[in-house]
Length: 118
Image (cartoon, rainbow, N blue to C red; front, side):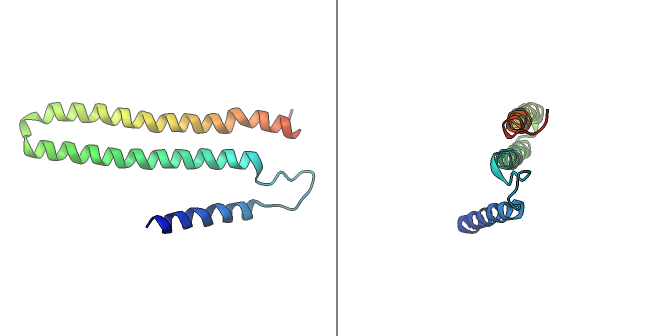
């Protein structure tokens, strides 16, 4: 399974770089730094969201099993589960904020270095 996933990611990255390749010219920047930043931000947010989704599923499953075994503790388990889900969701939001920072904060510096924009 790991081999299939790693080959899929490899071909995705190679295919994306080939698809984004352009004819050489003064206005052509190609994939370069900005493309790598955007791709890294998108992959980072996607991996964080999928990991947090798996964590939320495990937390919900554990809370449901706990309530099924001891229904009298349903209130305490629900509060604890919601608190844990809030912490897990905060990790996803941190990844999203980092992705926005990488794209938008670094975009101005990249454009100035490339001589584009004002």
